Image (cartoon, rainbow, N blue to C red; front, side, top):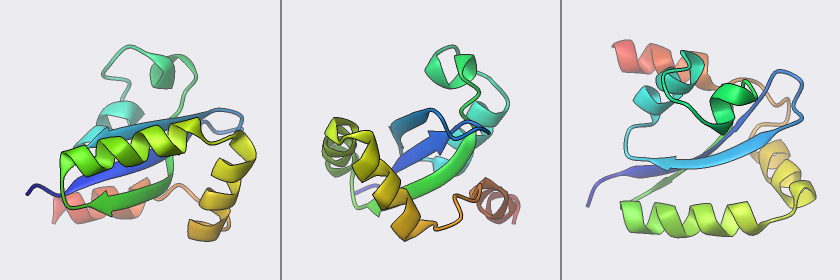
Length: 100
């Protein structure tokens, strides 16, 4: 079993929500912030980590990603607000842990 993550990124104006899955959240967020890969997150400047879940394996994370992606925006917003009421970018603390 390999720890995996489902995460939601948003842009600075909080108008776009991107749901992703990875086995290395620190690396993935770093790549989004530094615009390493093409795609929606690069195009819409989605690099603020506002939500994540930890799962025991990648298949479970992929299933959760599908469930969250299928939710309407209002449900996603409620999910984020419960986890991170101020919609703060959680990546600085995550990236600081990665450097240790």
